[in-house]
Length: 125
Image (tube, rainbow, N blue to C red; front, top):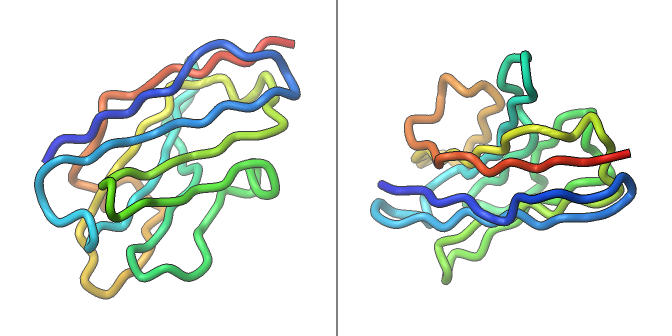
């Protein structure tokens, strides 16, 4: 399974950015898809996740109301729409995938076996 994250770049505070994560191999339609991020000098943290079953995605409190995670099973791709960006959103963003026959959403990175290479988002004030 390979995950390719892209869409990072530099943006001013208040702006927006959309990240994409293309997945090849495996069964995308049975993956829980997630986004994590790691800021300089900090631990990697959960951002958002979406189940293959649909339903309400899960978000970190710090991004609720600003970020939206979605997926396109026809394109084997998941997206992270980031609006109202803040300097504290600056980080390397990683997508992750994990098979979940139950459709469960995991917020701990230890549950994800498959990871993309990360894409850097820099938000300037």
